Image (tube, rainbow over all chains, first blue to last red; front, top):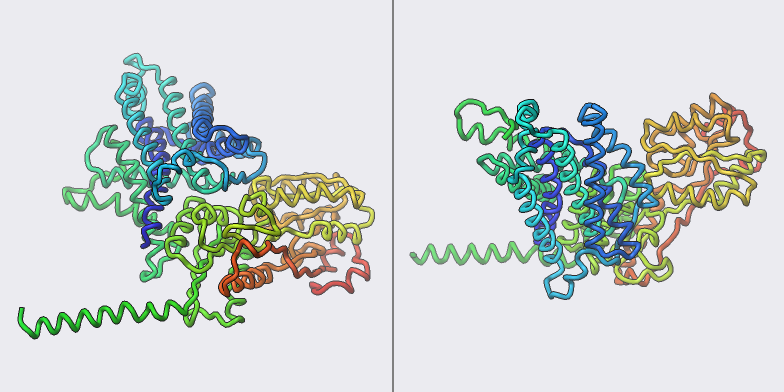
Length: 299
Length: 325
């Protein structure tokens, strides 16, 4: 594997680590299967790209993208909490609606950013080698995001969020306003995913409406691989694990792409993903050899 | 360490060095071309095969003096980005990205390895090149922009009474949106107005085509991957409601459209291969103008025409390169 492919894998792992964080919040902490992310990822990319093309500051554009993602999360939450639509269905509704909204925001299916100023532009004068620049910027963003999410989850509001996910009835009995917790959790989750979309679009030369395809799978793979590789439970470890899982997942894909000897091709990626997730689920159980642990159980 | 062991170690080292340098010498004569597409799709695969065959016809054969690598991103932009990084790390002589998203991912990953894109409808809007005539930088390629005026002319020749033209397309597909804009721009020249029907997924195509019944005199299906993959649904509506269906690509004529002036993607691939060869021979991508599709041909399907209630004029029939029976 060339160093560019390796660093590229880590870089993508970091970006999708934000998706992992978002999915960890909704699926694991809040116990809310949220498919909105397939729409909020391209939403983030589209908002950022449209603003950058209109000469907005790339960092502000990325923050605006995160805000748009938060709104998307709120819509899903509102459909679920206020209109009592089943959580999975509510998120699917928002996801398909976002396809049309993304087209409106972008004005066309693909907004190119090649040659535009991006979040990386301010750092290009620092003399960092080009292949290191993007991963370093992403690393900084992911570290900050992980810290903020941890602080959030450890705060009193975060505690309400975790209680809502663990047992909404008991949480309500204890005076937790579970509706608010769901809305807040989904907003933060989708803001993270949209931020990932914004950064990804800027590193990839453009936003495309189709870039949300399979994002939920990528996020889930990150969460599950991470949970297995990082032993121990608790939200701080959980958030770190999601980012680590995302990087490992990308490294596995890079390995599949570069395993010419094994004869693996990109079309085998789905199989590799399935094997990887299955291994991640079963290995710890085998190691402990103390009966089968319920794989993928809640933290 | 005994003498014999030292001797063996030295011999081993020499052998290792020989083994390492031998392929190195072969490498210098071998050219490498890396091809990637956003998804496995008959048209995109035809482009890839065209590139490979053109290189072979001109003396670059896989396994002999050419390393030809192909990866498909399976429709996933994250994977497309990763394939781009892998290719850039491998440093091939030329990278050939097929389709707009793949081309953007590769162009974002390298500013020095020559890139020859293919099947990109609007390379300027995709910011791959700043101008078609003088691309500059490390990028050139072949655009697959359909000859829309020719398509509309064909509709006008076969159905002279057509005043309202229905277009079924996926608003999420960059290429399709560009084509529909062109249809809207050129339709007045032929006295036609355009009625749009959008189909974001293949499963929406039937409903979209049905929505045009009673509102249009003819239906045009542009080279839109989503709609073309389910074009039988449009053909069915055409037959049921006696609305002639025209296509933007010739393959669709076999599947029941009346006629199309098109090109086949294999030829686009061959043309792309010629650009690749010029770069292998030492030309700079930035000096090679972006090319449009050179070879077009007319395909007709008289049986389909009959079932949709029109007869193909003799003049059109005699011009056809392929008459589907």
